[in-house]
Every structure is written in C-alpha cells, then in structure tokens.
Image (cartoon, rainbow, N blue to C red; front, side):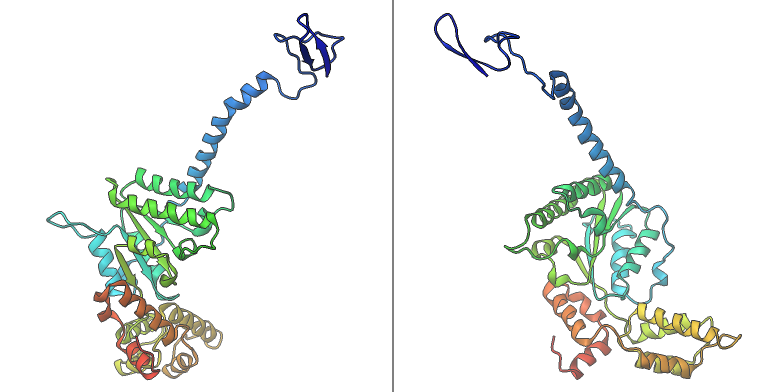
Length: 350
C-alpha cells in the first residue's frame, strides 16, 4: 500500500504497486485475486440449482418409502386383537350412509411381539391407499434441519398421492417427552411432527397417519392428544391361545378340545411371536429325528412349560394403567381375564 497526496493535498490510499498503475477514486485493481466478477456471478446463479437438486434428492429418497411389494397378510390371519381389527375395518373399509368424522390419526401400543406390525402389514396389503412405511432411521439425520425437511417431504408426498396412509413405527424414538435439557434439534423435530399432525385433520386430501410404540407413557403429552384413537394391542386371551395352537399344529397333528384347553392354560402370557418361534424350533428339532413329522402332545406341553413369557404381569399392568389414563375405557373389556387374575395373584393393582 502506498500513500500519496492529490492536487488538493488530500491523502489517497492506493493498493498495489503505484509504479505500475496509478490508483484513483475511479479506477481499482485487485492483483492475484482468486475470485473474478464472472466466477462470483456464476456461483450465485448455481446456488438455487444446488438447493433444487438437494430437495429433489430428498423427495426421491422419500419416494422409496412408498410400499410397492406388499406382503400378503390378511386380517383373517391375525389371531385375536378383535378391537384393533374392528377399529381399522370401521375406519378404512366401511361405507357410511351419512357423513361422519372418522379418525385419521391412530396410535397402536403394546409390548413387543403382540402383533402391532402384523396389523400394519395387513392394513398395507388390504387397503387401496398409497402406503408410505416410514422407518425412523430413514428420516432422522445428524445434519441440521434435514430431518424436518424429510418429514415435510413425507407428508407432501402423501398429500400428492392421496388417498394415502403414513405408517411410522417406533414413534417414541423421535417423540419422547420434552425437557429443558434436550437438544434443540430434538425439540424442533417434535414441533415439526406436531405441526404436520395438526395439518392432517385440515387436509382436503384423504391422508391418514398410523404409529406404533412399545412405550406410550414416554411419548410427549402434546403428541398423545393429537391421536384420535389410542389402541392397546395386548397379549392373547385363553380362546385366542387355543386358536393359535390349533393353527400352528394343524399341519402336523390334531389335538382334542381337552388337549387344546390344557395347552392354552399353561401358555398364559405367551405372545403370538413367541408361539411362532416355539413351534418353529420344535419342528426343526423333530425333522432331524424321524421321517414322519408329527408333534406329540407330551412334547409340545413340555416345550410350552419350558418357555417363559417375555411379558411379565408387571409390564402388562403399566399398559393397563396407561389405558385407563388415556380415556379409552371401551377397551377394558378386551383385556384377557387370565391376565387380570395374574395381576391379582401377584398383588399388582391397576
């Protein structure tokens, strides 16, 4: 930098080498600059294109959530869960003579293995709606603001392809109770989800939202109020256990009513998933011992007695307490009477 005086004795600051070129108020030169006016203009022009490309990539990744290859699961194949199946049938498959308000936002809760995913699979297969099955790992991102954009794209795509259904499993992963110590990113995600759930009710397009969780009491209270139906998916009652054992054993053996009754008594607390694992393991072990595959009553009884239910009465009592607090009292009649007897035996009060 050089300092010169002009004709009026004013100080003029000049950048560069004054010997090569005199710098005045009307001429300016930047030497060895990495950016030219053309490159800056080009960068500014490219910014909208980059943004649009980013949005298109998000939409394309969300479009992959649309279920195309539907797994064949029918409501008739699901043992028990009559209340949940009746709600789904009346909401999505019943024609009404008069205009009625049907719930668009449903929450299914209960312990693992009781059939929540089976119900959503049956809904996916039997409905004519466009189904977007959203996995939490597909929408949550460590980058600022990207999760919110993914949620925007999910609901926008559901709106464009209505009538549609969004299924979000394990919603507690992103919608737990808010606290003063939680990160800002988690709080923004909850607010964004709440905003979209509020918009579902006002949409002219027919968009519905279903979510599942194992931990309903951990969900944010504001989120819980958005669900018009909170459906408890419980363990099987005695008659449902009899039907489950009959269906799984029928290809290999036929048990009498008395035998099925006894097996259902000793299998109290087992979930549908546990029954399937038990029978699969038994069939695999028997197939290596004899050519004629047949399940004997004594062997099956022994296997059931050796299987300890993963869902304890204490755990079930938590769900029943939540059921009572949530105001869905019409579901109390669906709860297994054997379960209530277990709670009394263990001095667990609900």
